[in-house]
Figure: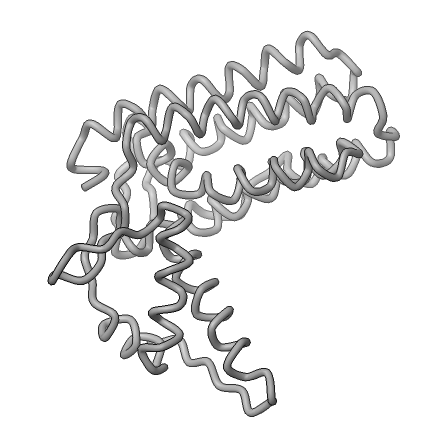
Length: 239
């Protein structure tokens, strides 16, 4: 089913360009456009039912973010997830998330912290896009309570770029078989372990225990990092 963007307002060209950029970026970050996959401008123009101009503009912006690369005379490719990129991303995530959590413990009210209870359960079923959305919203919600606008902005940027790594990490859970075509992992128990880790972090924050919170965040991040780095070396999961 193609995505169709139509707008007759004076700002339509800009809206279409931004809309196409958001669609392609979301599909890259969610691994709907699989890491390493190749395509041409015309492929995406037909898919989204727009001209090649907004596609070209979007791909230029995605190149600047290192999500897409040009293949001379062969079109474009979704950048594979490299070990170096993954290591850097996990280092940034750990630094930012522990800093955010420490500030939440210091400055957030009990009522604000209680809003995190909404993430003690994940979406029904084991739909991969829904799981990735749940995971992203949890980490953004935590960052958003820290009270430092610049830290929130930097953290959210890292978190939003983490969707691809989340996909790979979750797909790498022992016993989980992810079908890229329908995005459904088969191991609900494995996913519930991640929910339990989120709940433990919430409990530590509620207890205003900085040391335990930092330790749980490190453990949660490091286990994800290990799964991801192992999976990157497995071409059956990441091309």
